[in-house]
Length: 134
Image (cartoon, rainbow, N blue to C red; front, side):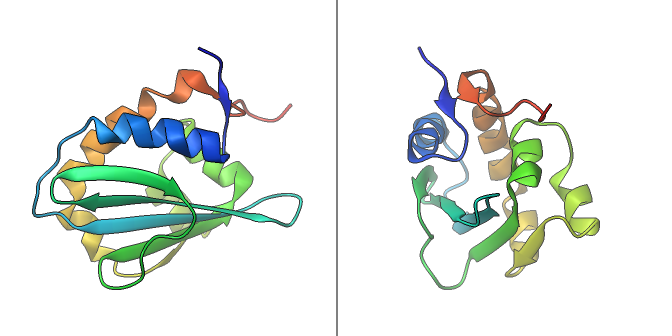
């Protein structure tokens, strides 16, 4: 199967297929949105929604309201996280990853996020554009 380009609707579809296979705690309800500033000045927005033991990913913003977190960063930082090259926590502390919302929601969703992280790691080999720039 051909690789799909990182931060495209096709990539979000691949991600969505991977996370749809994972079952998580049905008590966890969370929307994590990522806004990525691209070098051309555009912003690519996608989100991961966890509800009733299932997860889904889609291009565009997530639903507004309680249980929604928005991460904002530049493309290189997003690439670095998606490639598994470093810690989102460290990037947050260094100011390269910004958060809008209640970070405490992540604590309650830790097991679900770890399971989903394993699923997303599985698509790295099918994602083009994760290599560090020349």
